[in-house]
Image (cartoon, rainbow, N blue to C red; front, side, top):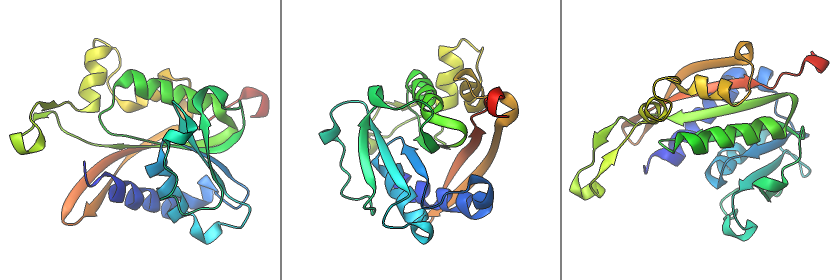
Length: 205
């Protein structure tokens, strides 16, 4: 999906413009990101609050650290951490972007986010919408299956949407907010579901 990166940049900018006071990213923030594209979007969106010392942007790696390209992330405070070395209750924010990945992968990613977020830490999930359809030969053939359709199929209808997956990962229902956003990328409208979730800990409520 060639429009994915500019769409994520645009939508993340919208979210920070509208909910910036609540999300509250500043030079002292520690931000966990799902991949280099998201890290790049965060670096661009937080330029106005960045300092030589932060915010610190961490890209989670599922393999070797050297396998993640950080060259396009415009920040001096970016690093890569293997998923099995993430610290518990450490990050102030976590940003996760998905398209039509395997729901099991999405669920595991959300669980890692919850584990690594500190109490009252904020998670931002951006799910770029793709409709289930057959691809043309020019697009490589085969089928594109929407994330929600995969969720329903794999759970046999027990879980129907992204917010259900986020709850299943351990985020508290009353601390989750979902809404729609869209971005225009070179004349193409890209729709997304955005979820803001707060890690809640009764001991710090």
